[in-house]
Image (cartoon, rainbow, N blue to C red; front, side, top):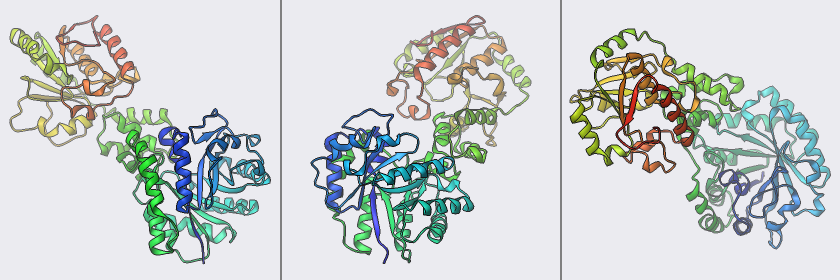
Length: 531
């Protein structure tokens, strides 16, 4: 009968969450409890020569540096493993096995590095270690490429090789396809492992599927305590152990795993949560690197439909390796929906030319300084234009919406039956079927500075400049504070806005207002970091 083993990678994969800074005491506690629970293999971290020695971290420059965490522990059940990301650790940093506390080493590598990585693994094997082959992103290989790789692995004769679903793309049929391919061509005595991330919430189900397969192939399931791991997280060690106990053989003492979670893992989750999220779902459903989805969602300018369309448009050759320049270019091209806005300029000019203009932003000052704002309105009777939001505090004449996400979020307020404000949008706004009064060419309003490229205040000021407005007052554009809660008048609003590069954006907007002020008078009723 085949054996099924659990390999806990909390300290290694979970380290992506906290930069491997678990603390020496917690690392000893985790390893000890995993061993007492009977977990078959415990991966204690990365061996990476780029990092300096730090006994509190599960990433060390050489094998000897793990001595601090392992010495004094009475390990009785678990095989102790380390991991190398090929290219980050010279072979000289791997001490001979007889001088090391580590029993085996796993090496992860990209497809292009497979031959060099396998030679490196052979050198590690010669030093006396058990070796394990982990080709990352197996979904990026064709069947022919996998068969070729398996032939090379058979020649190396490692303890095991893993099906690594780096971005959590696999459904059941995909996993079974790869398993059968490896099972058919891999030498019978080599153990087959499975390491995956939980982008589709399928890693537990897929792990159980492997456990239930008939056959003689020995299996290793990678998992981590509470699913702790990069991005969407991993299979849960405690759940895999529970399943094994209830359905195969009562082997693992799960209470030790639960103690480790309670004492050492939940505090990490409180600081930096991991697990399933919209960005990981979108990335997995489009077979691409999660950073593409995170990058687009973080802009807070696109509806989810648009994010999905952009991810679909990624070239196949670039999907699994994040390319920031590529996705920014695709984003700008996607947003740049051209339109003839000459008539819109003429009509809006006819309505506001010769009048003072007051632009209202969502800063906290529109509440704190409401009396001053209302006093200005009564004395000057300006045209009121609300920028990228709408509320009932002031008698708004126009609402400007500069991106699809904001338009979608305020859609029902914008088009409500009692709403008299006219709507101004840029041409990138997704058509909704509802009437929009003025549409302006998005591409012509963009700024050359990336952090404020499509800033709505600057876009509206560009429109007003083209209309010949010479007197503009602003209120509620307080500037970005790193304490997000202080930035907005409503506690819900922060969730609608991007908070990256706040200081850079403050500086960039201030510089742009200086330039625009050469053609128009700009003053602020409320305190602002821009003027």
